[in-house]
Amino acid sequence: MLRRLRSKAFPKQGKIESTDMPNAGVTFAKVSYTLADGHVLLRDVSLELEAGKTTALLGRSGSGKTTLLRMVNGLVGATAGVVGVGGVETAGLDGAGMRGLRRGVGYVIQENGLFPHMTVKRNVGMGMELAGWSRAEIERRVEEVLGLVGLEAGEFSGRYPWQLSGGQRQRVGLARALALDPAVLLMDEPFGALDPLTRTEMQAMLRGLLERVEKTVLLVTHDLDEALYLADRVVFLAAGEVVADLPTDEVLGSDNPHVRDYVQAVSCRFKA
View 1 (cartoon, rainbow, N blue to C red):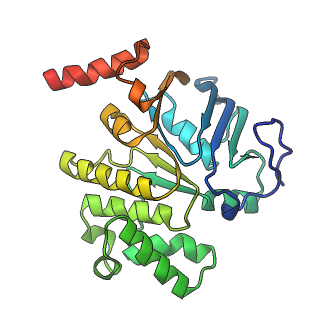
View 2: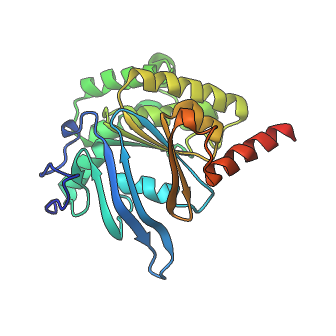
């Protein structure tokens, strides 16, 4: 059963269903995560991610970006504080509640996570199969989401992942994440393994896609240019703490020392 909500930030009670989360925002209220050996990965993180907007998380490796992202869909549980999605606290969800949460949260990772023995259609449609959709509904939705990411269903549905380029595989992974029409989309370094030209193409595709669909997006990246291009807001993490939280158009002119370090590092790279 869902734990009784402890904060005014989480007014809704009851089991999460994906259809209950239109334009859902995400809230982190004094969230911490400490390992069994006492090492602190996140410390007192408080953020409100506005529904329908894209937020980028930047920081060095080990700063806690992926840990924070994985709390949204319950893959990691906070050791202190509260995480809420669509106004509902995620801690204490029972099995059905957690399945409902994950149906409402799409997840895209760097390695795309496709099943090599399944066709593109089966990979994209897997979540719909598990949710009990009919074959006709799955066929229609697979064609629709492949079109959204720039792949023609007639050409690609029957292919296997090994028959695709890296960029095409990442498009399939994005289509799978969008298949159940989630309110929230998590993206963990989605283009990090791609060559520069393909990465640029994917960024342009994603920006156009996000302008057409209303999703609350949390994007983990090391790339400042990518964050500025795709996000409405940029949050900087250092040693598990939020050190800056800025609208995208204020990042380059910020006096925050952590932000300046990032901007200067990018500038020096291009001057070298």
